[in-house]
Image (cartoon, rainbow, N blue to C red):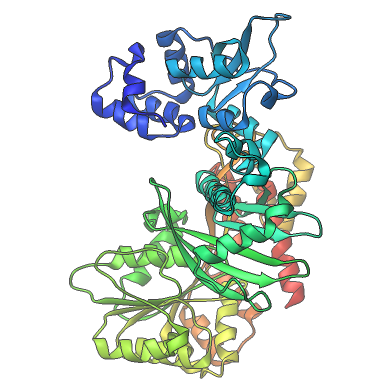
Length: 566
């Protein structure tokens, strides 16, 4: 375990304050360069160069790992020190060539010599590259499950006690979650196969397979049991789904993790939804609304009553948008009460309520009681049934501003969905002020996105498929594409940005609702009045350099499939 004292021994750190050294000592090695760069207001590559000059260790950005790295030093030390044995240009060298993420402490030289009988020759390398290489070679949490990790205390494999095995599983599960947090994953999926177990992260809306240690299936049951214990679930019940929660604290981040188990052919599949308790909710400005749409939303939020609905599939960012709206209108003179499932963001000054189905506190029941609490603004997590819709509409007609969500493909579809719930059309027309349909698309990495040259004929065809005027081909020079760098993990994308369809219920739309017009007719009317479709909003985000054209095209294809299903 690294201490402040270990760092103080390194003379090149003498210019740092004790507090700064303490902060560095508390960080994992792979995170120190980033923090060091922030201390000196430098980019990571500039900070790496400074480190190299200060401590006299050369930089390697292109290296070839030893064929059998664990034959040189144990896997535990590779992970703990974040270093790799690399091939040397010298044959039969008396030195062991190593690349690491941070200048080594003196004790590391002793460790290496004691293990392999050679003095180390150190090189510095980009932390992201070294960490990625280690994970790619050995898999996430490999050192936790390695038998040698237990053997160092003098046990034979047969003599390893059950508690030691359990400790290894605990370390492995914690490492998988910790790694997911570091890569900004929103979900972790543990999926049993016939002869293996698969773990995948959802990052920026995409599923990314996780490189795992070989033969992980031998501890599959132990991993599943560990997750169920953490979530306080019944480990003996394997036939029916279960839901639970984990409060995870790795010292830097507190995570509220929703856990869902589901029985499959081979074993239970477990899904984890990661909710950062300390993450700051976005403002309306940060959602990514285009300026004119943002103005429309702000005007609707300023009204004292009515309903504002946000629609979209699961994972479209609806809860994030609602929270941003609440922050916008959260003033001391307004009493705001919410009912959510779950509470994803804490908003100071807002009375937030968690749904508890097991005691009968669902959206409808909570909404009935909220009306007795003298609210000015009510936020209902989701309108799922006629009763909730009816109470929400009547609340808006009696002087309350109501915010909620619906699962529909587009904005006009929300109106027909309410009619399908047997809500009187005149009540819908009188209460609903605005409907916002939204999706999330991947955001281009700001550090590596680069211009792309497109064939004009191809671009013209793509614009037509998006319902966009072909005159926009003149903006082809604004289109950017992903390249991939260390900051985005080589994916070319980092984060997501929203695309929006903002429908204002005008007098014309009001009349169409009363007449029970189809969603198609309502849509055509709204577009004629200036509503921007999701596809056109996506194109605007492409021109702003925030996302790529393939991502918008992919969304358009998915939307077309959804329409065909409907």
